[in-house]
Length: 296
Ligand code: ATP
Ligand code: MG
Image 1 (cartoon, helix red, strand yellow):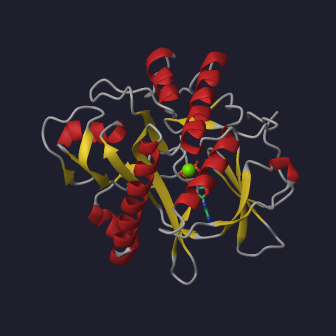
Image 2 (cartoon, rainbow, N blue to C red):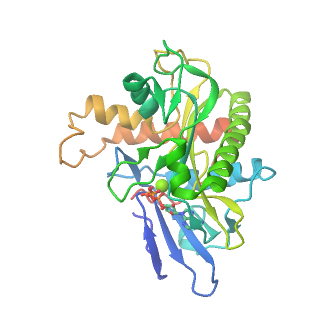
């Protein structure tokens, strides 16, 4: 079964979420998280059962933890029954065209850039770091949002200023680091290293900056097991890395080709699902309510 399409005007269909207009609630949107999973800018098949509900509930949980730092876009959970548990009503915002990435540890595209240049997004880092090294201080490494199917591009602070202006750039920088610091501490107390994460912010008509999209989920973050982490050696992770690794190392798919990635075998889907559930269980200490899984 797939996440049902609703009889509402569809504003945007992302790789994972759908945004609908709510004709009787101007200025509000219905954000629905499907069970789709994306990696390397491709939507994979099949979906991961329960994932949309985990992303939605985890974002809600974090919004609460962060409420004294930043306003968020949540309005209500008064959503159509077909998508209950995987949807929320949010404020429609003017989104900034940037992903506000914060890294406390060096890996992924940050590690790749450091190996080439010794810096990430124009921030010089000391010599001798390894894949997975903890950074002395978390760094703000924004990326310009690319068009559909294209890859987001790491940018330096000056580029960010060109995109959003100096005042907004400073606010995005400060908010992102403050949110990361709070979240990193909460995760650490629960045995999880928040290696990196990305936020999206938007602006209300009155200029207030608001935390939007999903927040601190296993799709938008790297969650590592604090017990097994070792720089250079990696760690057990409760996020999408497992799927990226399967695609890049085991599936035989050539990322640089034009071909679509292969379907995920059942055991890869299940192992991914277990990781997302583990992230939820460790962070919130709770069990997910039973849900009618859609897995599209
Ligand atoms: P993107 O690179 O745009 O995030 P995506 O394929 O990852 O593409 P999804 O994350 O699946 O897209 O869809 C969510 C979309 O909704 C994003 O484009 C995000 O910027 C947008 N969005 C999130 N919250 C709001 C909001 N409050 N108001 C308007 N747009 C929002
Ligand atoms: Mg997105």
